[in-house]
Length: 360
Image (cartoon, rainbow, N blue to C red; front, side, top):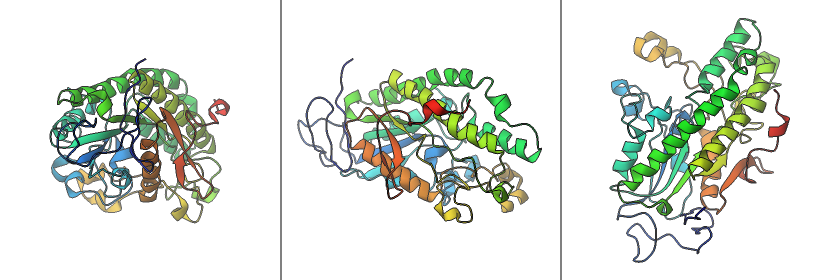
């Protein structure tokens, strides 16, 4: 396999994988220095679904909080604005809450009135020098992760059997189905940039996996509609099996698309919704969240609970730190894990260490 040059930015500056060390030119570029073409601001872009749009972090831009039917819910607290990348002048969030791979494709569907994210990226790249594209996509396709969470809530409320009993019957098949869809989306991102003059070595393309928003063994008094109404068996299956195996599938997709891969499957350990007990301030994910004011508005009522079990503002701050560090390394893949101070940092490569011990 050909080893390409990558623009790697972060705490250690820019390096080129396998070839030579480079420094970031300023926004105007320098003759003879590789990098994104053009003369616009050096830019980091996030794409994909609610994980990166900022759903759950609050303070959404007015134009994505229902205006004209746009519910992308892009937050001012979203990770992209907090990624520390020396030399970068602009940070652009194209991610949209609820997006699937179809909404990223060049010929894909419109999500909440917005055109294809890949097409938006192509237009952006005409005026900005795109140095890195960070993507979180796939959970809303065949895995239908939000549906899984809803089914598990219903299992607790109805006192029915654990939701994992039904979901795990075809979980592996769902993951097999989503891999080529994610590959297609990543390929279209490359195509969109290629159409405006980019070579693959001019920018980084990074695929993220997902962190578990919930964990088992939460206090019993929090298993209610004000916090985390789940059965313990389902919480264990989500954290210890569903999230990890989805990370494995996304890692495969990144490899097929020749993208870098950053694993978040262990990133929320100990910081999941309700893990803080009486102190939700320790958590990086929202608990069950209901916007009661929205129920009086038929248009907004359908979105009254969408913030539930998403990274909150602190979660995005932590995720941004790890993404920024990863962009500054030459590693093909790595994982985000908490350091001794509890902050999220780049750890070793590959999927989290507990994959082999998952509950089946």
